[in-house]
Image 1 (cartoon, helix red, strand yellow):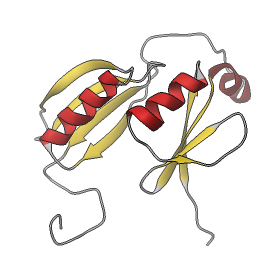
Image 2 (cartoon, helix red, strand yellow; image 1 turned 120 degrees about the horizontal axis):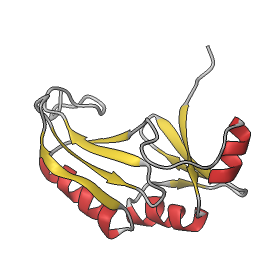
Image 3 (cartoon, one colour; image 1 turned 90 degrees about the horizontal axis):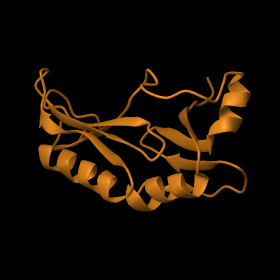
Image 4 (tube, one colour; image 1 turned 120 degrees about the vertical axis):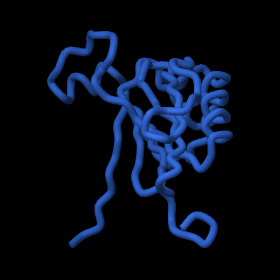
Length: 139
């Protein structure tokens, strides 16, 4: 079987602002690419930014609409402190804090921010499993 990669594409209204937020604000590694999209490597997948109206057109849906989009993205980190750090970093970089970091019903710790286009991100720490590669400290 050929290797596959999962990719998340976010429709954005201001490409430069979105690129600044994800690359410089949150520190995601941007992939070299010449064209109308921006790509970032994630651990095991990619994320791309694409103009909002063009993405709606490609999907053959209306570009208008607001409120909850029915999806959230998650950024899983290794500690409660890191949850607070990422939320603070997002807010300082042009995102909006939606839900401050707090203990949650499933035993973890999380909070939410919205990126400059309103995409909701949960930043979470889960004490029940380590999502990264196994190593002696996290196994």
